[in-house]
Length: 386
Length: 230
Image (cartoon, rainbow over all chains, first blue to last red; front, side, top):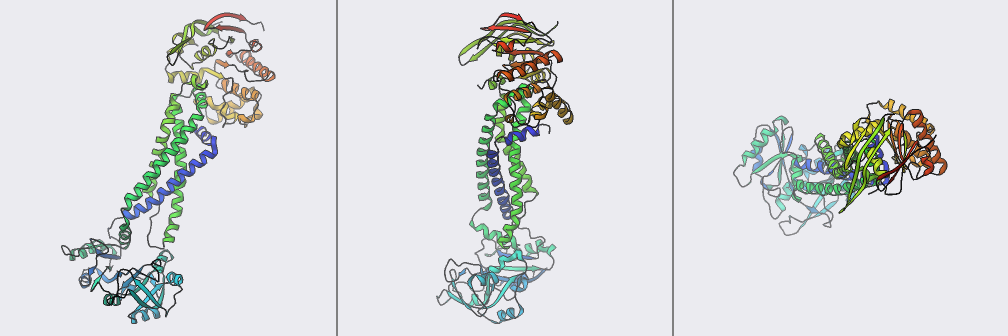
């Protein structure tokens, strides 16, 4: 600790250079914090324990439909309280650019989602209208829709049986999310599965996925296994998982997120190694006479080596801690902005541990060569400027 | 008077590329404790090399150097560093202060290698600065001090850990006449009042007048010594 002021003094020798290096380390670890949260979210296990609402979808692919006949079988699984179902529709409004989530849903779907708050009168109107649809407040605001409007959607995946791809819905309700953290729900449009099932050209008696509410969340894992056993060795084997795991699996369709995130982080840290390594090499090169003076005064080779390594580790650790701290502050904001569509975990102990280990490792690696140079410095040559 | 430094058959050869350059040839020299020795001679005569060897900054190619009864030519680099920390103070032509540290912190540097507490280090450094007349400049960085003041800080740093021997390489080479006189007077005080043995390399005959002895080197050999009357 008595040498700390020497390390600080070395760092502050070129304030601008140190500030820019700190910023680059900060940016790298901010990115690490955010991306590690993404990786953690995507690597989250599909263990259903503790969840009171689960999703049953095809084990092979999310786009693979399941038979409607599975509904009654799932309802009989002990511990299952209610079962709803839904189907992805993928319609767009007026222009393919106007994309938003829209689903065909079972009559009891809204009962399983108390997160969606629809005024009772509008719910009643929805139940009574075959072509009725309800939309989230954000979506209604986006397109200026109001109750009573007729909304034409272009069924880009599902044309109607008569060949027309325009589906017209009667807007009978506008819902809100119960919790501001789930504001993403308000970007959805929901309409009747029955209307979809009867009118679409491809599917009959098939659903995209089932939503299962269980009586005792502690039994979720057991119930999930029991549901999956129902269709074992059939052509429609299922995978029952938590809602979050289901949503993440949906997002994973774009590729191996872990690999992508890992690749980006490796590139970022490799760049950081080069950048910080160059800075440290330059910093030590400039201070050769000063290091020679320290050795003249009696500082041993080992102490000089440790001083340079400490400087390097301190630089990376300072930027790294600030970067990870910033990531911890930003993640809740990112989650809020995502409106609950995807929930990134906070920067946890594992991320901090890995981050600090990386800071130490990078600091030691980038400081190694300059530190060895300082350690091997010949005093007479260095003082003579050779 | 007993010899603090005993040098026997000292030679130093440098290898520069494929060339071998013998800088010192079989030098024999005794420096008495409490002496103030000026080393003079033309450029390339081996003055600084001899000073570096006496200060333990370099090791000889042949011969022996004994300082205070210890054969420093036989010490490894770690032991030599420890020996320098406790037995020698250095003063350079260009002061060689650390630019980011205040005068006080520069003077404290050698004390970091001792077991003294932070408070004791501060106290000792303050006393050393007072001795060189710079107590009011303790918080100033080297760039905020004149050349003469910087050299006085360097001298305070050299004696703060109370070494027996001070080695000074052209301590006045970068100073105007008045500052040079102040620095030389200070060195003489350290020699006379505090008993420090001083070995000083200089080109300046006026600076050498402050020493008790002058030794001339030419082409790596001692050519004459002269005792000054003070």
